[in-house]
Image 1: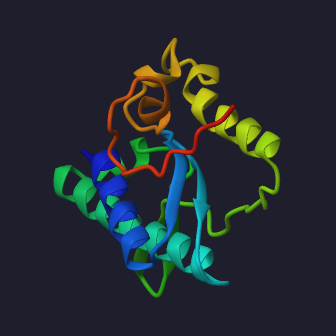
Image 2: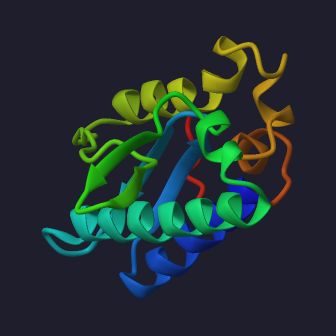
Length: 153
């Protein structure tokens, strides 16, 4: 539920900004994506909005279930006390970007993203993980985000 809703939020924001998502994986503690935007600054805007809206959903959802689940959610959720108000930080405040300039770089990053659940021991085959674009590329199945697949030779 949390992962699917987070990906729906990403899907909406990408359309609002006219961005292309070529690959993604949403892991329990982090995410990776290959995203192409039209204008300078749009990638930062996309990431800021996605992290903000998805974190708000996650915290609200887990609070409704039982506030104890906020601590179980992951070691990366940090609680800060500011003016007697609890604030939960679900995502790291920054993100790393890398300009992909060649087909070889694209293929390397694509494979890294898709193999992340396998390396983490979550699945044996990347296309078996439900929160990745590997399903779009390898299993010819649509995932939770519409992917702008690129044929990689």
